[in-house]
Length: 396
Image (cartoon, rainbow, N blue to C red; front, top):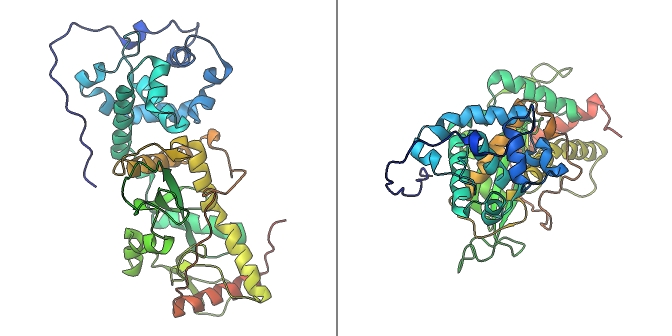
């Protein structure tokens, strides 16, 4: 995807030196800081409990917020002229924290550009520009927070997955979710119309046991099914070439030479492949196979929970987006995944645990794939027999 170019800037006449951003802000309470002034603006001059609570507004801790500001402050202040263009309704300049706060409001609340602009007495185009400066800066500065695990990290990932339900050597869990778009966003085109007669874009995500995003693909239209999106992804090509999920480990307590290769877990919408284990689908399952399916279903809850939390925290992805730019939307999705990972990496207490509901695709029916690799079926049987023998029971 080509880099996003900013809007053309008109030449402006030299202007007199401007006062510091903090000078024009409402006076903070004694002992307060930047947040006090921002909260006053957010509450339109009235102190409300919702607007006074930092974590309820930004859905992250102050520690994470400060990290984001330090990470991208150079990008926000390097071009002085652009920085001065952003002002509140009372003409006070937005500092780095103000701009990060405005961008996060757009992502966490999902409110329209106009609505957020009205809160601060700003034009909706200014809110759009600030948000895109934030997204572009994070794409460049925070990419290291979303990557495939190193060999050392993978050992920890496998151990955590095995701890869930006893499945050994599991490297991740995969699923997709639909980001809904207004029907007028893509006129005269059926490619974005999904199986539920909605216009949507699909996000494919692979997560680890901590619900950290390890690989994401977005931008494909909702008319494509999960299996098709998988096969068009770079992750699929890497796995098929043996460049990813190419390791193996011996099964403890099994005869010498009993090994299981690296794999990820996926639901019934995916093909059964040597590196992708899906549940058994035949009728009248044996007790061992039924037990494997229960373990499988309990383990892939991490990806279902991750996608549910993604939409719940970043409300811009929830509901129906009004006429989104189909070239920009994947970048919004990617940055929301980045922000989620940053909160996990910083051990942000505001991120919470598993969501109360794992339903991230309300109204969508389960897809099914009938593709099953013969060798993969044998590997699944081996896994099934192993977990049946270790006899670890499911949690109550």
